[in-house]
Image (cartoon, rainbow, N blue to C red; front, side, top):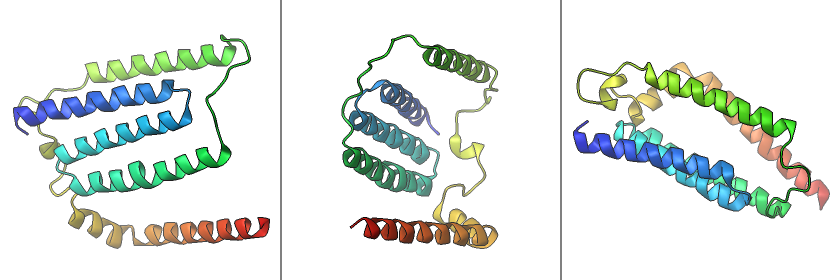
Amino acid sequence: MDQVARYVYYLFALVAVASALVFVTRRSPVSAALWLVSTMFAIAGMYVLMDAQFVAAVQVLVYAGAIMVVFLFVVMLLNLGEATSTGPRLTLARVAGGGAAAGLLVVLVMAIWRMPVPSEAFSGAQAVAGGFGTLKAVGMTIFTRWLLPFEAVSLLLLVGMVGAVVVAKSRI
């Protein structure tokens, strides 16, 4: 990866982290979902720079597209408004959550600090096996080694859809 691509990768990483932080601080579920979409697009951009175009396309289609549509549909269906707090601002759960987040941040910083730096120029494509993330590599893996689990998941999804139709029809 050349120097410009390296800085673009870091820019996408910064956008992803910043969007994720804004996502967890929003009170409105709709605006939080939109910030999560921004995070998903930034991650997809990072995948493209690592020569994993298929993974990036799936990231956009599945997570930023379908999952967010379902999430927003549920938010609208439940008619969730802006969160209002009626209890005390500082509770034991919030203190424990803040402590856990601080601990995870320390572990993350230590892991990044001790990460070995490659002596050559930064290259996401060299760090993974050749063909990683390409359509051919993903197709060969899914339809040879993981065929049975892939079909089992598709059957489970079909059963879930039929169950949702049956439950929705019984309420009418």
